[in-house]
Image (tube, rainbow, N blue to C red; front, side, top):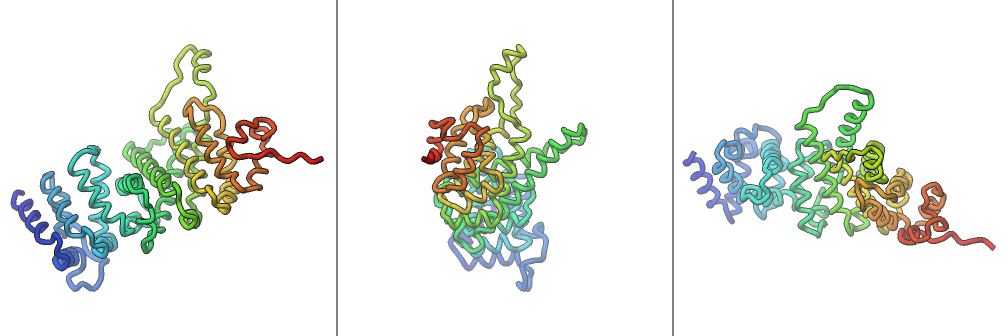
Length: 374
């Protein structure tokens, strides 16, 4: 074991800053012997996999540092890692290690993040997630969420060749999450005892959290081109679809205190349910971000019933005391310079949101009073 660590450290020192040795090592480990193609072989045959699979934490760390020093600053080698079958398996294992490591302050977690950042920046993550990423790959998306939160210039990961394909993966994750939650609530409604493994539920929740966080960052002050690509890959569709599902099965509570007074018992607060309520807020924020100064997005959101959903959250909800304020901000973006959306809101008299019925609330959302005819 000590020999393996020493050998990995020595090799790591050799390849650091030496592009020729970096290339030789990566191609030698990831490509078939004849170098003809990058689509055959078993990752378990690579030195990287063996180091990362060790029971020794020191050996695993040595493997991480070796791989980091082998690709650092070299986007071509990062692309090779994420495009070859052997390399994809290794990279996905690193994502799994990142997700499994719950000590955010540990040295190992820091190295994992730096390594995954080398794959995120050149736009390699889309290759790892593919068109239909599994929900148990949440570690990769969590690393992306951290990266997007720490780096405000999101063009770094979207303006590279194939960068926008990442949006397709994120859209697909939300679709999978919707399917899982719909199945759970469908079984409950039917009185079915069908159970879902706890690990799968955890993967679903963490995938949802990371994806929603990432989209929240990517849509904040995003360019019109980015919003166009979001529409292309049906991100608004998936966001509204998921918000609608949550709204159906997690109805608002106008006054939890009133319920307590009637029943004489505190209203139960399931932690998992409370966390799902927080996603409603974040999804509303994404809708508002997408609609900001983008007429096509504003109209699409209305056509997908997203505008009606936002309006439905402009009421007090003790599950989330501030969700009304988030809805007002989103509504302002949806109504800005959009006469059709403004007219749609005016017709929602039963919502109590017309300029005549609630002028203060309507004004805060950017809804102008309808001119009176003489």
